[in-house]
Structures are given as C-alpha cells and as structure tokens.
Length: 282
Image (cartoon, rainbow, N blue to C red):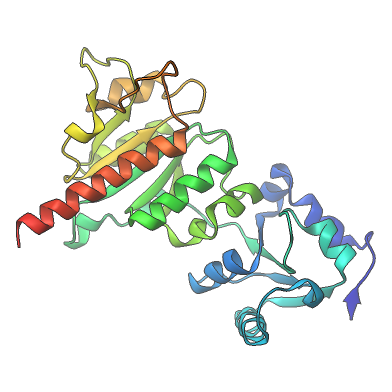
C-alpha cells in the first residue's frame, strides 16, 4: 500500500513534528536524507517508521536495498508514499525520498565518558551556551565529528538538538558525536568535578584577566572550549566561572566571527597542538 493522500493522519503528524512543542510532546524527531539516515542507523539508532519514495531516490539499487533492510531489521515500519506526499513531509531542499521518525535521544551528562577516565588522551570538549540558530549547532557538530572532539555539550539552548535544521546542518554528526545537554550550572559543576579546564571565548577581560589569543594557550590538557549565543556571547555565569578567557585576533571593524567558525578555529588549534605534542614525544 502506498500513501497518496496529503490529508492522511500519518502525513499530518510528520509535518507537525517540525514544531518543537510536538517533538517534545511525542518524544520524536525527524531525520531526512540518505546520508544522515544511514549515519543514524550505523551509530545504533533505529527509526520507528521509515517513509520512502522510491521514485525520488538518487542512490543505487544496492544502497536502497541495504538501508531499507537495515531499518526493517532494526524494527522500523516501512511506509511508501508518492512524490506529492513526500514533498509535503520533507524539510530539506531537493528531497531524496528518505525520511525516518526516531525517538529523541536522551543527552545526559552522566552518560558521557571522558577519555582520561578510561586511560586515554586528555578530553577536548566543545560547550555551546544559548545558541539560537540550528545551522550553527549543526555546523559545530560537524566540526566535532571531523576533529574527533571528545564531546559536545549544549547548555540552555534556544534551538533544540532535534530541530530538523540541526539534523540537516550536522549531516549526521548529531548521531556520531557524544552529546549532552544541561543547564550552565550543571555543566560547570560536571566539568569541575572531572578536572576539566574551562576556557571562555570572549574579546573582553574577565576576572581581571586579559584574554590570550587562542593560539597562545595550552590546549593539550583536559579543556572545555565554551562559546556563547550569537548576539551577546557568553553569560556572566560562564565568564565568572571560566579558568581563563581566550580570543581570536580581529583586525577589521567587526569584533566577532560566526560562533560556529570561532568554535572550529579553537577546536582545530587544539587538534594541531595535540598532534604536535604527540610528534615531539616519538
């Protein structure tokens, strides 16, 4: 059976899941697109329902059969729809005929295992406070995946991690990166209890300390790089609790960069320092 009615209750429910209130009420989220859906399944998440439109797909027959079978094996109900129905449910530009409905993951702080707690390298954590734009959250998650960051922690977010635009911008990194959520107070206590140094990104002095350039700070130790809300930056709580402020050189008339770019610069400086540190000990 193929759903062809735009007024089908199941279609309406999927459309309603674009709204945060509906997602929170139902404990569900949407994952659209072959690549993000494949990543979610590879990372151990199982869709409750997989909506597919074979006529819109841009994958090989083998890829189609493999992902469909993997979802079915994981317990997903497979539902076929026609193109107009899929277009109504889709949230991406140029939909490719794949849309999964998943249970929202629980992003719990205590579920994170920091690398130095199991004998491995010092953890590198990216913390984002009050980030408003889903695209920025998604971009930061892609950076975390690419750089091998230990964990990403979202504090009091204005955009929720299950937002379809976060899923889209992260390109599946939402499922590959260890993630937690919490209030700023909870996260600060959690970091302190684990001996993680807190570095606040800000162009201004805090606690009487002038911020150092991010390239001049030792990032090889257990550190949390903390970035703030797009317009106003970090809250006073983080600025007062930080061990040190760090900044990015700005020589133009604008005093800040996009938050996801700032995060990427700092994270990759940490990656570079750690690689150099390993090379020097060989």
